[in-house]
Length: 108
Picture 1 (cartoon, rainbow, N blue to C red):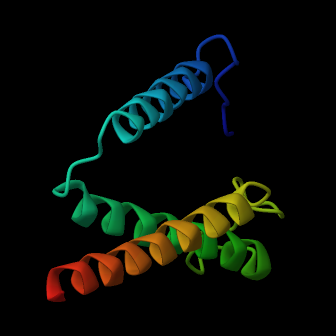
Picture 2 (picture 1 turned 45 degrees about the vertical axis):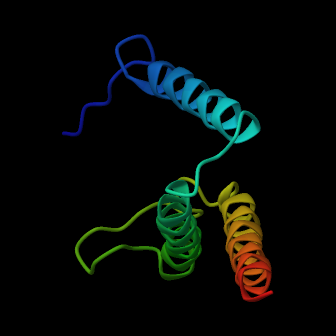
């Protein structure tokens, strides 16, 4: 028999609080002068979140991750995955655009 943790003993709220704190930290860094060394991290983050969003959609369609592990439909995280998808594409397009601008400025 499967046992589930009660909401009071789980880690959902601490996870949420840590994520909000991380988001505020990222906004703080971005608004106070993002450094050039963050570009590779931004690429990594955008690609991971793009794959994450596509994964949630795929799991919802298939109903499982691997053959032996089924998930309820829709998969957890499915409803917010379009936001990840849009945000990832926005970040990728901005990284590409700013890279071209930087290269053009360097060439002149």
